[in-house]
Picture 1 (cartoon, rainbow, N blue to C red):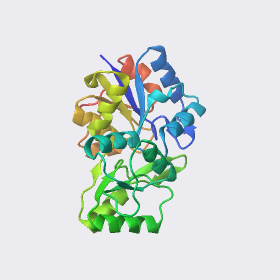
Picture 2: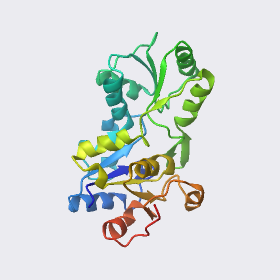
Picture 3: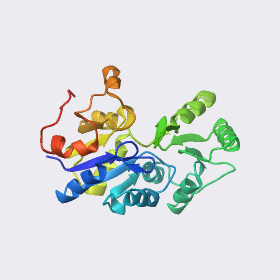
Picture 4: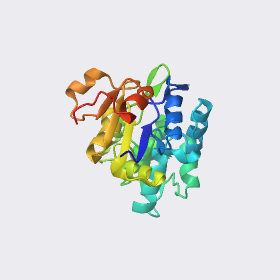
Length: 264
């Protein structure tokens, strides 16, 4: 029994500013069948409202409650596991504003934590500040581990290389919050009031989307509209439950039982 769908955004239902063909219809199908769903993104460059407005403009029939971001998960982690700690946000202005509004204290002089997010406004000064804070004892926390961010024309450098940069020059290990961390799945289940064991994870990446599902023992659907190609599966230890060309194929395959089922 399917209790709900957890659906990645970048590369899964859209690329850049364009919806993937058939993706809005897939969401309509879920709404029509009254199947709960959450749209999940590791991208921490923007706030929840940004993604809501973005997908609505592309024709997706969703509500604000359907959106879950790695920034939201990070805020929850900080409040639960690092209460009262101050942070230096290495992220976009929107990211800094969102964490401030959530009640996280920002300190640009002597922070407890360097908080690394996807930053399209990154500068050498920011990188250097973060290095000095880490070298002086600050903890390193990252919103997600993605190496690349999908765009309409290809991919942009994401947060992953910066995590490795800071780890290599400071001998510190980052705490990474977003997918494939199980806490993202737990937040999605809570948002839908759904049994976590009955969730279906839909995404385009083996090392985040599929790994989170695989490690948690839930059904996974790999779509081939984003980063992963079929040949990548040959060398991957993570095996999705289903492989489809796009989310448009899910109603006729995963939901109705006619899919190309892979070996877990």
